Length: 618
Image (cartoon, rainbow, N blue to C red; front, top):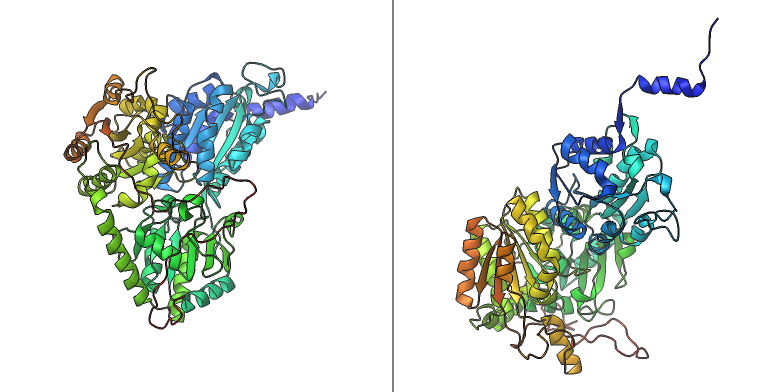
């Protein structure tokens, strides 16, 4: 007599005959197979299984951060150095640990920084019971809902048999199209649940075929370019994210069109090239802003023209006297700030290739009179600002510090990553920090204070543990000071250059200009008039790094050279000037009266001299 087994028992027997692996180990194994080089994280009970698998079951380099926001910013710096898969991976725990990721995730999202963030949450058995650190009042364990507006994709695995598919799609979403961070929450019990070990080939999920521009749009763009007497290209971070540096140079040289960069696009084009206009905007170069004001055709590539880039939309006269050709991989950014004459949804590299080929075929020629005019403006601006660049005042001038930093790096380690922060560095990094490589980077949209202190560590790791430099203010450094031990533990040659003036200088400067007084900008002890701040070199020493103080201009270069040569984590505290007038290319008003009408338009447009063949001077 034959017995038939119950269906459930049959399934158990079938499962017993095949290999099994936990979800956490399966994902770790796939990440290793995908070539993942480094994972950043902080231990917490929600991600124990995943961290155990990463650290003990793979050869992926695991970096323990001291805070979850540090881990995100380390991954941010890593991506900005590589700009391609394999992705940096971050793992965080539950509740407040995951909440710490929110500000830097927003930075990564709005600045197109790809990473995979695997967050832990509690066991599904306890969902909606209000267990420890659960986001439950509006729905069961809903951290992914909180993160959704500030990441490219946010999802939670709810079945172990779907975990691998969801992981692979999350990975793919992070680096395809416009890159960005993706959050994948995996509950504690699912991380530990066994699934079949016949894992899929992850290769297809690492492939990316970016969009190319519409040929008819390219034809229309070339007709505009051919008719232009004063064209310029304006580029942003899209150049780096599409690895289009060489294609940008080829386009500029084929057409003779000068190139200006936004602060986020810093170093996208070689700044020593004859067609470089440097950075534009609030703290742009004289030639860059002059070219922007007087261009008749602007080719915007991988940028969305923010207020910082355009002097609150007062720099360009679009569409009245200037026509815009706009190329971006994200169609939602096309025409956001200015109406376009030609809008092309395209990867920056493929767009440039198409434009270059079409320009050569149609015989686009360099407008030599326009280039000569811009050369003259460049010489004028360099002469006008030379006194700041070479200032020997004590305390030091920001322009002297940024310029000297660029000179030392160009001589000692030209390919080093330099990350300059927000605050007053945003007034000097764009114009006074000439880039010796493609790796001078600014966090140019959210402007999170202290971002550079952590991000340079990720950049160093992506560059084989080589020197990397952060330029930031004292207020910004205090928000990220605890990242120093991570660099010490990793033995990385990081140099933090901290501008110490015991004030939030960029806010102070503008408040004094607008209101005639400052509010909560200057730091001092109660009852004392003298400004006060921590001893930053002593802080660095206490955390295991080298601490150096610089108070005279002639001391800075030797201090930076010694720090780079030492290959030790080093903080250089620079006494910087608070009262000397600083650099600002465009002072623009913030709308301060709800009832006043506002619209984008030129502010103080310079009169354009007539050029040969351009009788009306327009």
